[in-house]
Amino acid sequence: MKLSKSEEQLMELIWQQDKVFMKDIIELYPDPKPAPTTIATLLKRMQDKGFVGYELFGNSRRYFPIIKKEN
Image (cartoon, rainbow, N blue to C red; front, top):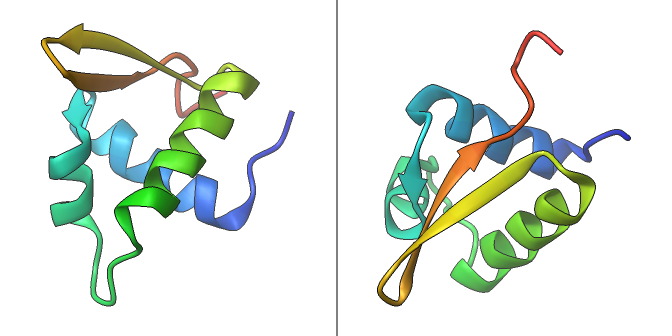
């Protein structure tokens, strides 16, 4: 399965951080930053494709890559 350009950009940020919360992802994006709902949608799509997983911390999700960058 392939990633779209916007998913690929988000995946690069996740690979750089290894484990990251959504608020940190938003901070890492260059200006103009996408809306949080856009990032949430991309993360959901990437989960469905098997690229990203998450751990729950209370009400927050910490995302991590399932697929290595080399793959």
